Length: 179
Image 1: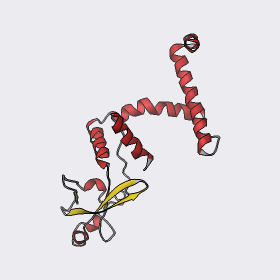
Image 2 (image 1 turned 90 degrees about the vertical axis):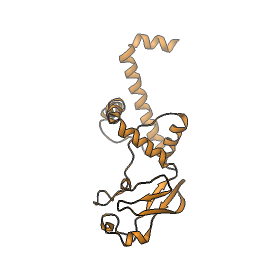
Image 3 (image 1 turned 180 degrees about the horizontal axis):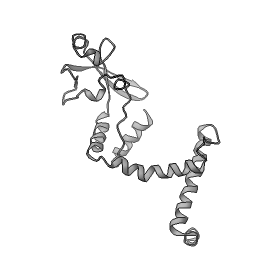
Image 4 (image 1 turned 90 degrees about the horizontal axis):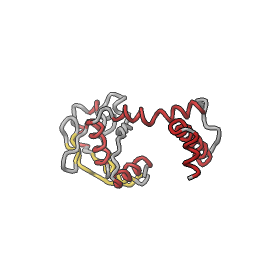
């Protein structure tokens, strides 16, 4: 399972409400074609394409630990007047992750709270910008993931210590450490 999807499911299981924009991974929109978001999944287990055709589920597969459902209807696509705006292939296939309702709910929250990403940037992005400036806006000095994790961990520790000193002062910090 992809790490981001696993984290999203873990947040939902713990009762944490994530606010992360839905990833748009298809190149269809950039090529001027309909994207997956233009296809509607009504209450039944079928998609409805922009031309109104119904795309039933044909198969379920597991790829990289994710259970994926695939929807298509070859006959409707071949007779469709909008096919050139939809797909260069024989038919348009829509793939849906088994837990994609969680992602859809998160996107609805994002749509209802337009300032959420602005607030997230204010709270979260500043520390990373500061750390990157301390690093000289360069790459990590180490190679391999365990070493890079250690390096970024030290940077985050230094950032947190500087913040605590700025808020509490050295004297109160030393008292808290001794206690």
